[in-house]
Image 1 (cartoon, rainbow, N blue to C red):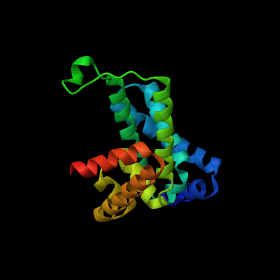
Image 2: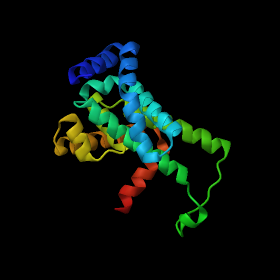
Image 3: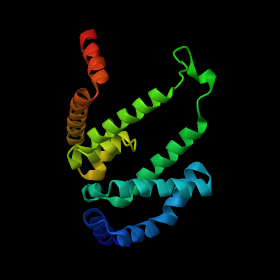
Length: 194
């Protein structure tokens, strides 16, 4: 599949929610990505899951696909990070790894509900960012890419990526201060301590 064909498919997915184009893209990349993920985690079945997870995220964030200049580069980097996240999640944390600063906490149903509501507010804050800013934020914070990788991927300067992250963080803080009183109190205490 040529670069132009891939670009055409990503545009159909982003602009028209085209399931057929998404299926074509998935089928084109699946064998190579599964082999690539398998070289990282050495588990064929789990490699297929990793690649499926990557494509689920792509579908969920499809509106931002047109901003990606080199989709092949992006999809392989995303797969690598997803595979590494899988490895990290498998390791877990033992008691000896907690160290002196480690602590145990027990979750009550109320704490779990509050945590879930707070996560929804944070996700809402992220979704309110302008599209390019949101894409850069997600690539760095959710996919774990470095600023340089994002700059290369999107054809931007590192300074532009840094500026977009600064804008994203400021907007998220503003939204959280408005919607989460406990966050506003915490943030105010941090300012006083400085």
